[in-house]
Image (cartoon, rainbow over all chains, first blue to last red):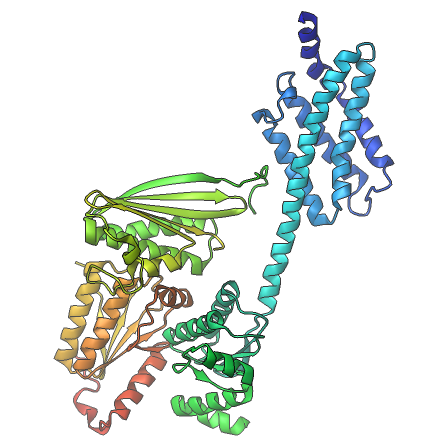
Length: 295
Length: 148
Length: 136
């Protein structure tokens, strides 16, 4: 028992001495893999990344924490691993490629252990199990972070789509149009509202046309969102017209008992525009001549 | 970009920063709002969400002044998974609210406000919690996530 | 004590709110404005809130009060320059400020006021009594 403990104490130190060998072996394992993505990352970068990790690991590794994967000593390692796998996720590495990265380190470590403890199978088994467990835990973190990285990519794209799908068009001096395509949920309404109101400020437009001909269905929630947008536009001192009311939409609105009586609604964008012109003529007298000329 | 940390399976909420402030007179309202704004800006909260949060804070602090002659506030920067946010706690030793359910209904008010205090405030934040004991006081906690 | 200045521009009163209002200041503004409307016989009140970042229910109420009080003294109130974030928040809060006129900026607010007064059927030619009366 005594001898066993003594031997154990040596493991971390022994591995630290073999650092160069571990890195070389790990690199060899990685480079040997057919799935190596030299197109995504140069071998030099890969080596630097691998060295950083081995460096951090060996610095923190003691015979105590070797058997405790939850040890706070590994915070740094988890941090590095997290960084590596997030970067890989963004660069487009597959989960398999990312997994191979960390698991080939296990191979390297086990090979070294095998060399060192070849005369003591019991000891070899014990340490191998521990190292194996530790690297497995690293592997799990790598995957978790990898997925998190992918999720971030998806979230960013979702944001972009939301952004793209709500263009605010300046159709006339003082008139903005916002064609809404797709379903209106509360998150989207928020974006639509913010974009529209900001554009009203930027352009000083007093009329906004919200065209919903591209909205598949209007239920009471969507209607509520529309009414909110109209009210907010009003608070800023602009008028908001809703156009593109298809017959089906008119039907559902009435069947659901939604009150749109305080909202100016038009069947088509064209009729909304016409209405907007008429308002501008009444309200902004100076622009009347401009309008007549350009028409 | 948030720091890449070890992801947790059941993301707990962690407190990154704490700030206490007592509000006992109406002149404290504006400095308090400014403090909330400072923290919201620090975590990169967008203007609209910031405005909603500060308005909610203003409503709650005003309730505290009106019904309980003031109380203590706590501003916390919190983080849950990938989201950062601000948590505000308003604790007073006022008369308390006998019927919270009723107080949370649109159009209910015991004071001379417009009667849209609590439900309106709730709509401005991501999470809303109210606890009250009649005769002991009321504690309201709200959370606004950076992207909520 | 701080005070929000009220400017007189012909038939109109112009108030530009440039600081965050605490309650006392807002209540004073309400009282001062109503006094001014009475004293000057102003026909319109313009409240410019373009630099105000927060309007809570208290301030919303003050604005509503000013509008209603002015209304029964035969003056229209227009709130101008509300920021998008403020508008969104007020709607979410359930405060659409019904009964208060709004405009994008001071210029358009004036335009709106003139139109409102015209619609009321008042003769605009006889406004010499108030026009250019900025001697105060």
